Image (cartoon, rainbow, N blue to C red; front, side):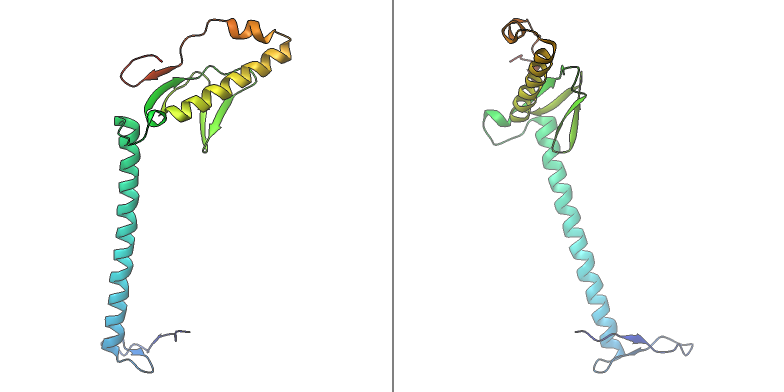
Length: 149
């Protein structure tokens, strides 16, 4: 266990440190080195966070991705059932009527959950599920460049 370094009483000129082995200059050098290392670690973490945020922005705003068709960015507009105030994915709430830019894999999941909500609402109201699925619905997924899928 490291020994605690105590400050000696101030004699008016400068502070001295009590350490059983190190001189005052060595204590100051060790403290300066520790501060430099701590700042370097802090900067490294901040840079990593900034790079990760920029990667996410590029994927969302510019559609830059290396993955397959499920990783492409699309827009989705939700039309939720009455009993669904919102859908939540990864802590983010997708509200009724909202239009969102998401990956196709997320859009597919949201559409499935939206349809399940409508199916549950139709069953609650006693509406035939076949008739429910025959209803014309506006497309809700669009490519970022405007093509409807």
